Amino acid sequence: MRLLSIIGVATLSISGVAATLAIDGEPNVNSTLVQEHLKNREKLIALEKTHRQDHIFRQSLSPTAKRADEIVQAIRQYEIDNYWRVAGTDDGEVAERFPGEPFPLARPLISNTTLWEVVKRMPKGALLHAHLSAMLPFEKLLEIIIQTEGMEISASQPLDTAEAKKNATFTFSHNNGTVSTEESRIDSADYTPNTQIPIKTAVENFEGGEAGFVDFVKSRTTIPPDVSIRHELGVDEIWRRFQACFGPTDTMIQYEPVVRKFYQKLFEDLANDGINWVEIRSGGSSGKLVHDGDEEVDPDLDAWWHVLVEEIENFKATEAGKKFLGARVIWSDARGKDRTKITKSMKIALQRKQNFPELFSGYDLVAQEDLGRPLSDLAPELLWFREQTEALNLTIPYFFHAGETLGDGNSTDLNLFDAVLFNTRRIGHGFSLYKHPNLINQVIEQNVMVEVCPISNEVLRLNEDILHHPLPAMIAHGIPTAISNDDPAILGQDVAGLSYDFYEAIQAFDNIGLAGLVSCIPYPLRDHGLLAHNTQQGSLAQNSLRWANFEDQSDKDWIQDIDRGEDGTSTKAKHIQAWNQDWEDFCKWIVDEYGSKY
Ligand SMILES: *[C@@H]1O[C@H](CO)[C@@H](O)[C@H](O)[C@H]1NC(C)=O
Ligand SMILES: *[C@@H]1O[C@H](CO)[C@@H](O)[C@H](O)[C@H]1NC(C)=O
Ligand SMILES: *[C@@H]1O[C@H](CO)[C@@H](O)[C@H](O)[C@H]1NC(C)=O
Ligand SMILES: *[C@@H]1O[C@H](CO)[C@@H](O)[C@H](O)[C@H]1NC(C)=O
Ligand SMILES: *[C@@H]1O[C@H](CO)[C@@H](O)[C@H](O)[C@H]1NC(C)=O
Ligand SMILES: *[C@@H]1O[C@H](CO)[C@@H](O)[C@H](O)[C@H]1NC(C)=O
Ligand SMILES: [Zn+2]
Image 1 (cartoon, rainbow, N blue to C red):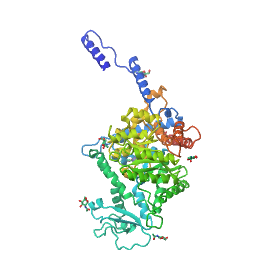
Image 2: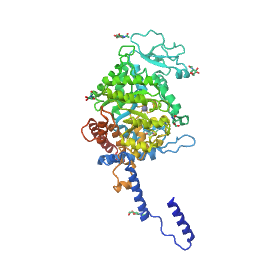
Image 3: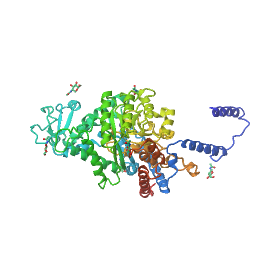
Image 4: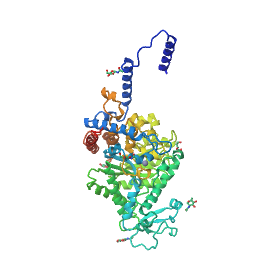
């Protein structure tokens, strides 16, 4: 404002005496004034960056990593200019395309990019926020079910019309003996409701065969692109659809041979995506197991968890799993349950923790935050639970979902305050956190990390596209963050790994860049050596290990290990050191593979 008025005055006086003064020279980039402006600009931007969470991390890139960073920045920019920025034609022949377009529309285009090839190879560290039944794409799970001896399907009504396919509930089960039904088609009008049909028979005879059957199941367990982009319908509408997707998944992962293969496939896909540690949100209602060659659920509540423990070890013993560090479970209760049910489930969680101290990592409340119980409402249960863990000498820290909302000041938004007061070690989503400067300071001080799920937030209609996501604001404010995928089988990533979520973040924001690489820093700055290189992305992935709950620790030890990061000999430090080595190898691969082209 001040500057404008000075210019205004100057202009006036110049025009007043225009006749007597000559116009002198041309604008020149080398003039003292311009150079002074550019210098001030650099200083101001550099000052801003000192607040960034990744500021320190950025200072330590090796020469290879620096080069890799430049290459990736060049790839990204090339693809923005030549691949993503396409003007559509009026006749619709050429579709409009732009960098940062909604994920459901961009997804089929992403796999054709070089940046995608790079991101897929990136060592991603830990996956810290994902819900078990929505982690592995359903076509993969169905393939396992269809190939498993004795699996059957039944439906509450014949699946003969589009409407019936929408309304019916359907159930997978295992039959121990021979099936005594003449029926072979679940999608025929003659089908007798609730009759079990061997899955192979039902699939072979399904309209469209196996592909048709998979399409049907996916129509009930996934949110299609044309639905998720309808932001005009709002958050509650998409959540109704989303919650409904979990219904059919209950009986899909119940039969022991299926469950075992499910875990092997899931861990294999994660490892292939460069993920070597996972904390799975599960528990609550799930965890029902039908043993090999059986039909009924084992009433022993440990049965399900024994299988998980065994399969983690089995996978680590395979070639594909030799770098896999393992998995833990964050016990998760639906926040919509009444007090009695939540308390009952908490007691079950406490028993499981006693029986499987290494498996269980922490406790959380899940499902739609907006319509569920706020954390403040659950204060009696949550504080009682804390007392129990202390009395029993159990370490079950909180990892709360909080602030997964568009609200500002309503009870969902305020969950963030409760989560911090309840000493949450990480926050799931924290989408509304950026609105609360004081709480941000507290989060940073308490070393709380936010598990950011960019595609989940977009598909569940909090932001219209990645460009409207608060992730860059969080990083800029100094909030520790890592990338997660939440429910990739349902929300459209349709792969178990993190590559799409990482791609979105790297592609969208100049300030993020690849390996925590250089993209955010203007070239003149780097040339003047004012700033070290930007290592943000490396930071995002490395953070996931820094905030991974590898083993039970007191609050004091937990914080100390986060502070020390890669220094020292703790379990955490060793895992970060190993990741650092993978990171260097990855950077070298980038330089070898793309160095001559970019
Ligand atoms: C500014 O200075 C640089 C190097 O000192 C020179 O190469 C360039 O041509 C100059 N630009 C103008 C517009 O004078
Ligand atoms: C994908 O890449 C190939 C080769 O670079 C190109 O021929 C093809 O047109 C691309 N597809 C799309 C959808 O851009
Ligand atoms: C499907 O459900 C709707 C709403 O409950 C009902 O009106 C309709 O008759 C049902 N159709 C079929 C074929 O089940
Ligand atoms: C299922 O069959 C196995 C042998 O194949 C048998 O041991 C088991 O008792 C049977 N279970 C039921 C519920 O029939
Ligand atoms: C509590 O558990 C830890 C191991 O987790 C053990 O070292 C300690 O002795 C236990 N304390 C009591 C009072 O049982
Ligand atoms: C909080 O506000 C957001 C935005 O209006 C809304 O979507 C959400 O349902 C609200 N939460 C509650 C508990 O009312
Ligand atoms: Zn979640």
